[in-house]
Length: 280
Length: 280
Image (cartoon, rainbow over all chains, first blue to last red):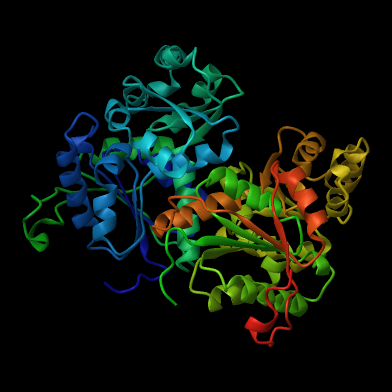
């Protein structure tokens, strides 16, 4: 594969809309970069699926995105990161970032007493991917993990604007009430939309780490060190396997801007690419 | 040059002791890494010197450090970063990090209104290196810069522990009183030792960015992505061109641990390396 060019695009993939929080941070921190975002809304959520199924879906999306000139790929989904990051890195010659390592690294940066909490979907928490990422970097941390299965659905349904949102968040975080921690990683890309409420529940002495912010910052670092920062933004593109109108509505709410969304039917993984790609 | 090994060392260079704040953060965030630190205390400060002289000194230190198996180099001095980073990167095949880009990137990550302040030595502020690094990443920021020539000497003299330190900091930051900003970059490696006082003077709505913390986090990112994180720490080593006892005393105060310091006389840049290196 040829060396990527500065004005090639950033591929971002997610099981659905959650990764838009990461896309938003890339737009904010790297406003000259162009994003091609893929949300596999039709098959969302990935959380309850087997790891091998999630890996298969992830590679299907990558095959689709590879028709474009990519200079980096973000796996903006904790479940897909836990399932497929290493394999994707081994196959692709461009930088591949997941959302777990950046959150882990940022938690280590800000913690003062090495007591770190992680919240995420059941799949992410069960995978112990954050524990592993934290231990790979630092041998003596205390990590408390908690699956919060009600929080992603709350956001997906738009309920994070509702009056009952605080109550749902407080209930979800109850098991953390008696835990000592100074840092909390939001280990699900939906949670930045609940960051203020989570901060209120945890108290101001607990620092909240958004993987979305940190992943965008790491992308900036990696592009910088590879001399691959873009000069000039082109149009972002958004692809979904689900309903483009619903996706566009959520994207407008979350990103604060109107976007065009293209519908895609993914081929079976072994189907020749050319026949099936442009369906939308 | 061969590919570096995971258990090769991190070279850190500085005009003197200031870069110890960066070394401390590397030790904290990457406790398995081994550091070889070089402080050119005899010729400190670099701030008032010409850029070409600073470049020459920087390369002399690099020639010394290159006798060791380095896997990455941190230029932990804002002046040397401004003067020599690009040239050093062009020459070395290992990752080279300065302290300016990580601080700029972190400021972009945390700012909410794009209003960023930078404080540093006269040399750093005059070089406009932060303005350039910020503009390279983001086209629409407002940047306020301020030279604070009294602050590094305050720290060097141990005065950051003294009762008058608050007064000195408040006086230095006076020109920022009527400036709108939500983020302040500590653009000098000495300033993390004054971070609490600077935060008190600026008020809690201004987020303080320590280049030391951010540079260590970027080192973690880069090593991670290159598969170069260490498995097992060896002994750190500290070299100085100045008085080893004074250096050791400051290092003990700042790092909270006793370190062995080795005295080095740097050769003229064209002198054969073998004859002159081990003097201390």
